[in-house]
Length: 317
Image (cartoon, rainbow, N blue to C red; front, side):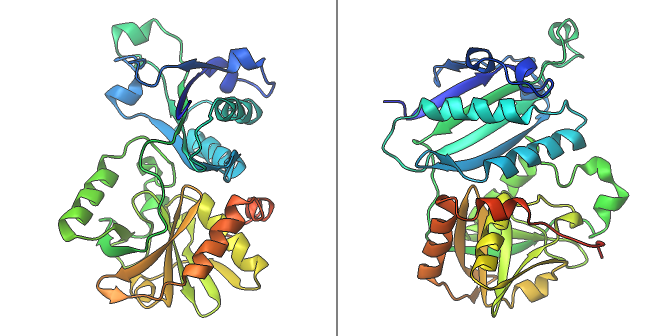
């Protein structure tokens, strides 16, 4: 039984042009327990690369198109080659085809490194082909719909930093996760499930590896990603659900003080919407039936097409 499927992508086929190579030229499969990464790869030496992650629910990769669009945007911000989206889509399909575990929602990850470090002797003589791994994992930590507690923490810079310092790569989903891991260790020290980050001047950003959505009455609000955060894929799926249900969905600068006063809060990532039961010690309403309904809509593909067209509009204020 294939509970963990590891595919090694062909960098030239997945990052060159728009044509799709034969299946056998897109990805090769490897034993997940084998050591297959080169010690001179920039993902190892520098954490220099990008990635995407989502759930494959009963064979359906949730938000895959939006994930691959965001991968392309991350590549652009990182001055990496542009991914071949049709070829990458087919490579993901080939990995999914190898999976046969009864677990309905394994995690899918697409990991892209810049390749071998040209400042090393090994990398200097190599080409600049990206290193790519695509894997499905049913045996690692999977998503839970159990409500989580949350604490707010400062990100340590003001809300205009992305415009002033684009080299910080805010809004790119990079492999450099040392900061994110440090935040989660702080959460463990405080005894909370996760953190919501905010700017020094008091505006809500995102969680270390997820987006945040607040509900005020019938309005669903999320921070405008142009503040320098990821454009959430699962958040857009939730917005699609909200609009289909007759609610209002809004992107805007959201003061952290206002977030703390929301009627309900939701953490969205990896193809899931997870309820938040408490923020900074304040209890929140959790509607279990609603949480199940929105996740069912996302996993059935009902929200997929609408989510592709959702995003902030107008001038950023």
